Image (cartoon, rainbow, N blue to C red):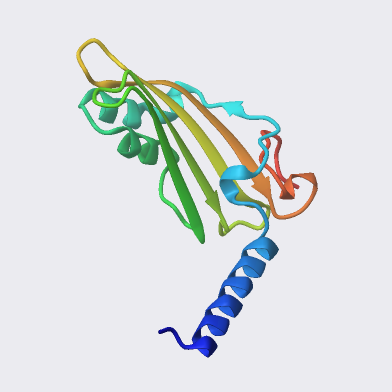
Length: 145
């Protein structure tokens, strides 16, 4: 039989965790994206070469976005098809960056599988989240103040 004090303690812990999560605000994945900037293929030549050599979508995406220097990084991959996907979308969201104006960045990368079975980068979009100004609660293509 469970001890009544233990049940009350667990309930208090759950309430505290829920309150902490609510105070932290929405998840980075749920923040609105007002606008994005299309990234030129010339900016991810090395990632395109990695894709042509048969690398996985997440590895290709991480090559595009570069080294991470911040506090939080979320990577979300959504495939079209299960066993042999025909396309894949990888979203990389970073927050707490070591920059005085840009707080975070969001990369949306769309990949398509070629006839030979390797991935091709179809499109890369990028948006920023700022430490101050209008873009604190979402991502946009405009420069941070």
